[in-house]
Length: 107
Image 1: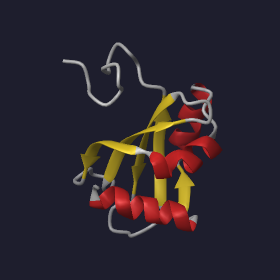
Image 2: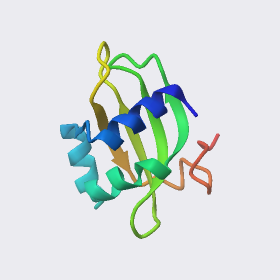
Image 3: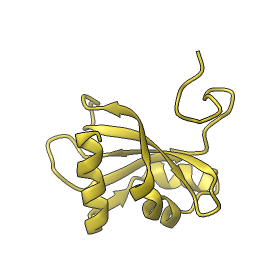
Image 4: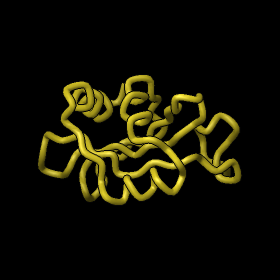
């Protein structure tokens, strides 16, 4: 497991998390409930790892909402800090950009 994701999962488990303003906007735009994303984080699968992202290390994960639909979530930790876990953005993956399993980008 990605060390970044392990740290983020631990923060989420402790309730040490926040949702960015952009994250809230994207959740609302796609009709995704924040509670579904937070509760589904423990079962998420890392798709891409960004250890050197300028705003802080982050990971793109594939999660499922309460009805089983796929959701991509970008979770991060602010650069220079050890907390909180931040839900940066979340969206329903586009089948034109992602393979059928939503784990790989199409060429």
